[in-house]
Length: 398
Ligand SMILES: NC(=O)c1ccc[n+]([C@@H]2O[C@H](COP(=O)([O-])OP(=O)(O)OC[C@H]3O[C@@H](n4cnc5c(N)ncnc54)[C@H](O)[C@@H]3O)[C@@H](O)[C@H]2O)c1
Image 1: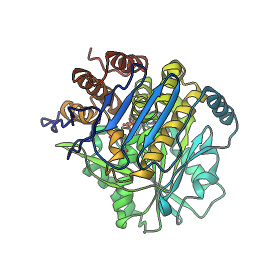
Image 2: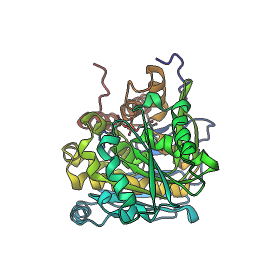
Image 3: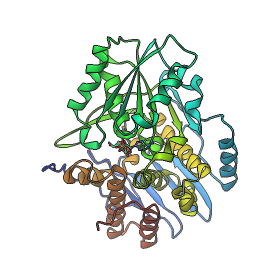
């Protein structure tokens, strides 16, 4: 168990209606504008700081430097989304980053559509990075998707031990060992197949092997599909703190085959939903309201509900990343609950709490603090507690 916790740094303002600059905090606070409105603002002052409110069913989003239109949801759109799920055509969300833009493909059966992956492979050599749990489930399928009708491509794989406690430099060396022993050159492609741990490690390996090679994400947990595979953050843990070593390195594409969630344990499902809930809380009140109405469908793994939640989360994250790729301000709002959460993960020892569980508790602590400071009324606190309980994120210690 790690003995040293990172300091908990939170930013508090005595005036909830005005934003003020702090240096290090990445957490955010909630404040109430009216009984039916939720407003969360980044603790950073930035031209792109956002305010999101929902009142009597009408939502508005204001952003000083908003460049893209508001993301809207309705039940009609859910039905539309469900209809799309029936066809094999993927839903595509674009991450708009100029010449580093890339698509996120979302849908059922996408690993059976080799062209989606193959068009993003550079060169003829591929290294799939996965772990001992995911490999038996999906490695053959991914190798087939990479090579079917494409005999010139050869695929190597490296299977890492499973778990947050292995998200360290010495585990990463196994990836470099395999890449170097296989004589991969700068024209190769690294493919991350797994949850957020594999995505973070493979991304870091791709960013640093031969000073950067092509990279594809195939996320297989809810956490990775709604959050970690999008936006280019890569990371390793250090014994003194979580995710302290990393880079920003964008993939060529993200391929989300929602069928992979069929094998995901329930506890992992709840952990991933914590990030979905966070997304609604920090910048999309209508999405949060949709979650309040549809949490049971999400927990029952209803395909159309899951696809919709993944798509909406990716849209929100893509928009934030396109406005603030390197977390100069706005992107820090996505760290809501993470300052407390990372402290929990680090103090208890990596892997004891799942990342989403720690974030869920972090959000509970953040809203509790906001409430104590008089920034939000208890109805907001209750809604946050309620939805996290319904998502069965195990945040009440037994
Ligand atoms: N880069 C980012 O922006 C970002 C964002 C959020 C989280 N993260 C990181 O992501 C990590 C958490 O990700 P996670 O929750 O996916 O954890 P994880 O990668 O450890 O996966 C959770 C468990 O599910 C297993 N698994 C994965 N896919 C499966 C499947 N389809 N069926 C059955 N089992 C499967 C894994 O082997 C593992 O045991 C943390 O390290 C966190 O810091 C990064």
